[in-house]
Every structure is written in C-alpha cells, then in structure tokens.
Length: 258
Image 1 (cartoon, rainbow, N blue to C red):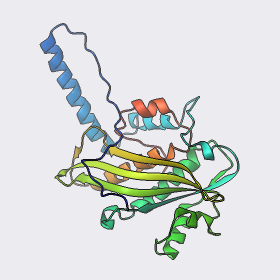
Image 2 (image 1 turned 30 degrees about the vertical axis):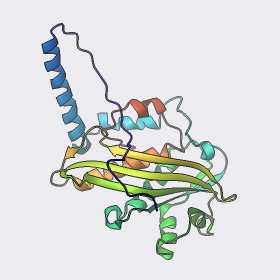
Image 3 (image 1 turned 135 degrees about the vertical axis):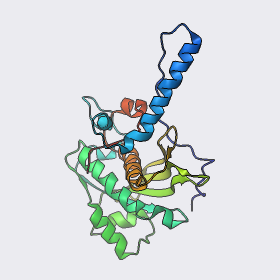
Image 4 (image 1 turned 180 degrees about the vertical axis):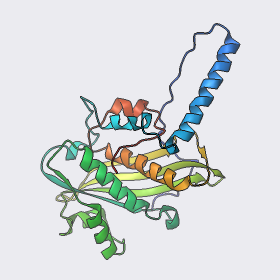
C-alpha cells in the first residue's frame, strides 16, 4: 500500500507563468503597474474555468495538434495493430474521497487516446467493457494483467493507473479549491507480463493558486480536474506538442472530447 497522501510531500506539476517587462523608467510606477497586471492575471485564472467562454480557452487543443507534434514518452502504442485497455483503481484509504474517480479516469483517458492517436490500427477497449469486468469481480483483482488477459477484454497492453492520492480542497482551508492528485501509471505487455513503462504523475490544478469555493462550483471544477489529470496521462502515450504543454498557463485544459 503506498504511503499516505500528504500535501507537505506533494510535488505537483506547475505550469510556468509568463513574465513581462514594462518600459517605464520610474521604478515605483513600474511596480504599481506590475501589481495591476498580476492582479488581473490572477482574476482571469480564477474565473475563466467556470465562465463558459470557449474562445481563448480551447488553446489546450494545441497539446494534440500541430504540424510536427512530439512523440510520446512511451511510444509502444504509436505503430502496429494493437489493443489497449485502460484500468484505474484507487489506493486511497478513504474511498469516499475518490468515489467514481477511477471509472471517470478510465473512461476519459481511453477517450483521449482513441481520439488523439495517430495510429489508426490502435483499438482502445471501451470503458463499459472494463467496468463490466470490474463489476463481476467486485473491483477486486490481483493485478492489471488479470484484466487485460481476460477473454472479454483480450488486450495486448493494459494502461494500469493507481490513484495514490486525490483531493479537491485543502483540509486546512476548506473554503479554497485546488485539485491535487498523485498517480502511478504503468503499461503492461499482456503477452510477456512485463511492465514496459512506469511513471509517477503528480498534478496540481490550478497550478499557481487555489480558487475560492462558491455555490455550484464543486461539480464543474471536479469535471475540469478529471479532464486535466486524464490529459496528463494520455500524453504519455500519444503525440502532442511538448513545448506548448510546458509553457501554457493551463487555467483550463479543454480537449474538446465530450
């Protein structure tokens, strides 16, 4: 069982903020203007994910588009006729905190890989089949290979995701919302039984500061956070724009897969 999820030991991914130099000679004036610019930027980060605007917020599409996208870190699925299943399970002690999160991640990661892969011969097992298998065993199984090798799944590879930590609010500041999660992502070769890829993924969203909780904000934020986390897993296996994924502010990652 992994160690307890701790904010103090958490090392999340943070998207770097941009720095702008202003052409003022008066140092005091420059400082005041910078304060205004930064304040407006923070307001934008806090409000845009929930304002319903689509124009500038669809910039995350660039993660998977572009004339020369970067190859994935783990290129096992980019060529050849293969079948892959995505399976997520929670390792969190308090299962109420992660209710339905594993199945949401299973569905979302599978959708992203299916829609964004350049390998037209890659088949992603439908999440409904995976969930049916999990229901039959009451979500209890020894390892991810057991899922992929079952005749009803018949996968060549399994992307096994272990949810080690997950929270939407800081318990010390419950009026603030900031998603934090820690995942262990492995790719299993169902024929050989080997783990051919293994990576720990930490995500913080929004990356730079929490937002204030308010009426009707919890569910939209949860959905947004699930999408951000799913994207961080998917880009390990499909082509994407590495440069833009690192320099983007990432206040919203709308991958336009509904």
